[in-house]
Amino acid sequence: AITPALFGPTGQMPHDLAGLQGWLLQDAPLAELGRAVQDGFPAGLGVTPVQPDPAPTPGAMENAPAQRQARHPLLQALVATGGRSPLWRFVGMLIDLGAAMTRSLAPPRLLPDGTAVVQAVRGSYFLRIGQRDGRATDLHRITPSDHQLAPNGPLELALRTIPGNRPDLAARLVALLDPCIPVTVHSLAAVGGQHA
Image (cartoon, rainbow, N blue to C red; front, side):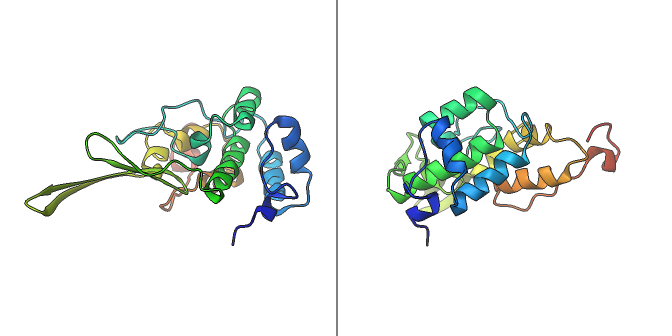
């Protein structure tokens, strides 16, 4: 079970960079993971540009827990100092976890076209079921992975920043973005390309 104690003595994430640096030094399971993310990705690696908020259409969009919590002061400070880095993603996941534990995530909602928007662990899910004569006729579903894995989406853009001689960082980045389908990363040099 997930308990507030995983976050350390305060049971929650800090609100600013100074608090984050102190939190990262704690002997708490999530702080240890945070240190591994911070120390494991040199500055500039795994950073993505700002992309559109998730919408019920296919394409490259930032559909992740960190985006859902992007207004949190700590996440804003992380973006200002290091961009949308792996640490931004990890801290955003934890802030989002805290919001879920306190039941303060946005409730499901219905868009004018009948699409349901539901908050889940990886981001926002969009689902619309067409019907006629009381029977389902089609299903339209967009998942966080659809947005994350789209061409020029967050995963591709983040991987472009990883040197070809660091497949370990590529694997960690895929784990951090956590798509719900298997992803295999190959160096372009290994498949006949010019760059890694």
